[in-house]
Amino acid sequence: MSFRACRGIRGFWRHFMFNTYDVIVVGAGHAGSEAAAAAANMGSKTLLVTMNLQNIAQMSCNPAMGGIAKGQIVREIDALGGYSGIVSDTSAIQFKMLNKSKGPAMWSPRVQSDRMRFAEEWRLMLEQTPNLDFFQDMVKGLLVKNNKIEGVVTALGIEIKAKAVVLTNGTFLNGLIHIGDKNFGGGRAGEKAATGITEQLIQLGFDAGRMKTGTPPRVDGRSLDYSKMIPQPGDDVPEKFSFSDITKPLTRQMDCHMAYTSPEVHDLLREGFDRSPMFNGRIKSTGPRYCPSIEDKINRFADKDRHQLFVEPEGWNTVEVYVNGFSTSLPEDVQFKALRSVEGFENVKFFRPGYAIEYDYFPPTQLKHTLETKLVEGLYFAGQINGTTGYEEAASQGLMAGINAALKVQERDEFILKRSEAYIGVLVDDLITKGTEEPYRMFTSRAEYRTLLRQDNADLRLTPKGFELGLASEKRLRRMEEKQAKAEAFVNFFKETSVTPDVINPILNDNESVEVNQAGKLFKIFARPNIDMSDMRKIASVEAYINTHDLDKEIIEQAEIQVKYSGYIDKEKNNADKLNRLENIKIPDNFDYSQIKSMSFEGREKLSKIRPKTISQASRVSGVSPSDISVLLVYMGR
Image (cartoon, rainbow, N blue to C red; front, side, top):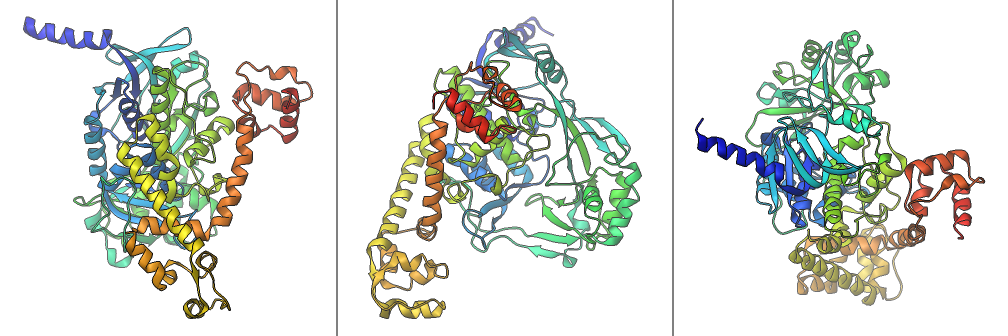
């Protein structure tokens, strides 16, 4: 090697060894990608370190984004200025609004994604993000001094200094892959596990645990007989995730398909149970309750003679297919034999078998609501390291950790979302105050204010906050304000405009609704459960208003929800206001719970461990009773 080349290499290493970053993000999955984008877009000099730059934002499991409650999270990420919504739109092959037959609080957008395009779009967007550098290496340790983060150490022995570090290691921390009676280290199929960080964190005083997740086989779509399956098309009029005008709805879509297992399939799978790591004791960690493996479903629901399988294409230009519902760690020969007994899969060819993976996580009660650790200042955790499961849950944590890491470096106030403000707020609060002993997944039922936290109004709730942070553009803010103003004006039109019996009664008769005998406001008629916007648009004044004010589908839908659910919305707002009063009662950081002898021992123990910041947060800590809160309020002079 020439002298000049040696000097160049030394200069390269010196760049890292003597250059301090504001924020270093470790791991480039969904959490890491959002964290890096947020910190960089807020003006912090950011480095994204990952083991393989070719696998940025890899969809390790199913090729889809969104779903029940998860779709709301993606919309919230987008409203704040994150990237997940835009990437999902630009790489989508199908769009569906789930739960459309239920109330709008339950509507949840979901896209089927092109796996390769999804990762490509993420990488391209990150590379175009100012203030963001990349480095490919494994982080094996942290630089910590006096319980404060100072940087990271890579496998190559390079020390990179930083004022804040965000760990988003996913399933890579001491990852162990299981296929039948075989197991080997790995964080994902074909990728090695990450070592060193868990051991160091334990030495620093952190508690650690193990969790499990799994994935189904990937198969060759050319070997399937789709004529024996039930087509699952996308929506006739597809929408999109992002509230911005950067993306457009799909103009063509790919079908998914649905198949079913059978008693024969179940019997074939049972033949391998004695070789299953789940049943023979090799896997001791806890898996996701709401996404069980096929062998777990057969074992737990022995009375069921069939289970649904969703056959999901992995992209526009690939024949690879994801068999959703057939997650398994059984031996590959058992997987293959059983799947060949599913109708439509008689000639199936495997790309690779399914597998289970065990990995380290750190109970999230060790974090503050900013996702900064309590033990090490400037160190943040996001994603599966906190015990969650799902791309969307990980991405939202990454966004929040990246935001708060940047705010800390910039000496600005922390950013915390309340439970009444976002599903993201519910997610973080659940993790911090309650912890989790199994992979945490978001559901609409976890949100007590889900009528307020709808997917359609995420921009109205969060875009002003994103703008204040420096993530959402002024153009986005103005677009949101226009939507809000037009929707409110349309609602006021219904409140102020009257309709006579001769105009409205024919419409009411068509919908088997009680006639009126005198003129009344449109709002009262529209609020009836069996009257919808299509009925209202039969009234000339309504249609004229829509055309005159150039109202689009999004604004019309927003106004309809505000009219039809106004009572529920007002009730939840009142309840949220009551809760927020308790959120405003702060508990000092150094509060000594041991002094409150009239509080239960469990209450004192749990509150001393969790260290909630407000009375409201204290009331949600598992094991803390209402009487404990009453005693605490009295002790604080309330």
